[in-house]
Length: 118
Image (tube, rainbow, N blue to C red; front, side, top):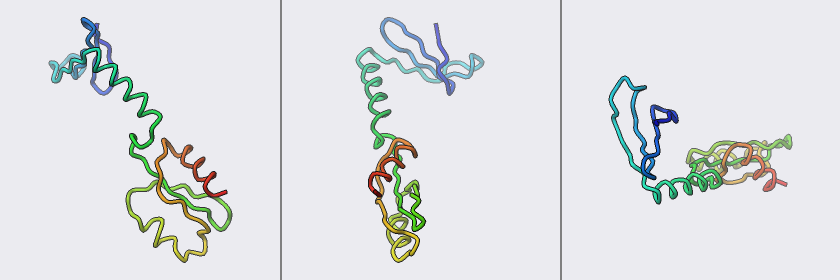
């Protein structure tokens, strides 16, 4: 029996294989089929577990600084080195900068910044 798992993707277990299909609610024929053998879906499960705990697999980087009013400013980093170098150098409101780092989410990034900016 097919189970809808989201984003037009359906899943079913057949002969120890996971069958993934994409379709539009049964109105359009199956457009893609992927058959995952047991060793592949085990590897996929391991990847998901790793991705949930390894921020570098999620592709999100952060940087931050301590403001002169003593608050910590937490910023997403999109690859422009000027964000934390030229834009901060000589800025009287920036006391200390933490260069880009990986974090799972903003909360984890803020915890990292709090530790680095003690």
